[in-house]
Image 1 (tube, helix red, strand yellow):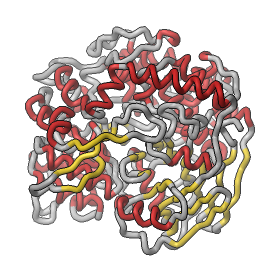
Image 2 (image 1 turned 180 degrees about the vertical axis):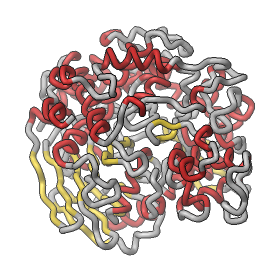
Image 3 (image 1 turned 90 degrees about the vertical axis):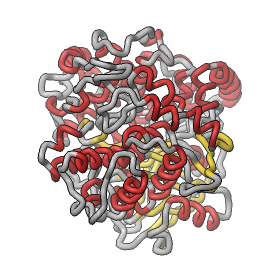
Image 4 (image 1 turned 120 degrees about the vertical axis):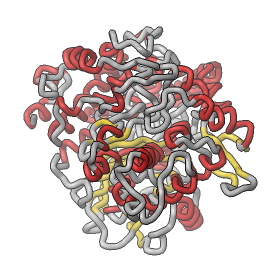
Length: 616
């Protein structure tokens, strides 16, 4: 069979009703899968003014048309919904083995609506789908939940679940696949938590061979050889994503002390990929069908941060709980990463919220009384652990920081807004627009807020790769705003494809857009061209933009905060600030946005979005 089934599993937790929907091929062809298809279904089914923490907010968990084919990087899944953190379009992407397992059960995705009165989990064994009691799982962390449900399954299963962060509606709670793959951003875990949906357990036994099995098999060999020869892929395999710590410092791309310090090199080298590999690495691990294996497996043998062998931190978590909070103790970073995983919260937003709180405490905007008698000092590891617990269980100032930095700043006031680095309510990742001006524009225009994985701008602007077949020639200078609008748009369109197809961006760095077209065609049986696939990316970006407009986003929301536009006085990006207004003006013209931030009717008609045009 072709790799897409067109079948969506429909689950209503309020009524206990389970059914399936069969999608038309033209819908799949135009919106592909993953968050692209979820955005189309959201437009058709959900009111834009829906309360994110209500039964009417549909939780979409989707694989892509490549899932289950064993093509490299094809095992990722997406979650999509209206975000409880930002109040606009929310989505996140994770790896692991959930997407191929769901496809083997016969489904392209799941749409969960309604709310249960008691904790439940969804059990899927091919065509047998049941809503089961999860009262004994409520209160368990991610690792415990995964172990219990794995033991219950008669055959090999894949588990998606939430921890205590999702149960307690931390606005940036994550969705976990197993113990080491997380769809972390924008609060999908809180959406599951409000629905009392603790987990989804999937067992699939069908085969996914794609439209052309022999061609798919040969293409897989060809692409794996390309990836194995690529220097970036080799570096990720050797040192994981934390290789960025060592390299990024020299270009001013590693944030420190809540985005105020431009040169954290001495601290960063103590917690970077080299140090982790030397001191604590036991092995690496890969998502299903990935030849890279960027995940770190670590162990701390002794000391206060002793931990059994298990998943290690990605670069983002290492930086947020390292340089951003002025912590250079690598063992503590590993233990903090483990707690973040177990609690099931986003490592970026949680670390950013703590760093923001530290600056507020340093400047006297919050006091020990606000902290329940404690303190929140730069680099103090005990303070960090204590605040992490308070965020998850919503105690004292943790209850405020559990809302994210934008909401926390509004509540604290007293000028604390100047300490925030966020766009549309989503905290900036651990890459800085002052070092990479195009990335600064990508943050400002991001449909889910400040994000480095909704587009390929970081990889292109850092010259990790180039895609000349779509006009991305490479050779870009990071600290230059000229031409970055024209660069960013195809980067966004490719990013939409990576989250619709759904494919790991690290694998795509070693490949070409033509390779992606081949992957799609041998899998689906469609006859995509590069132009058509890129048009799909543009359609999906504009669709998500239109959804945001319906939820209240205007041109005024496409901005960077004061902190993000304050130049560093030291480091590799000293004195550099992106010209956001110039880039934004050029971007609007090229992207087809009107002055109010809405897509023009001509652009909507060009992309076949007349139904959206009628609503805007």
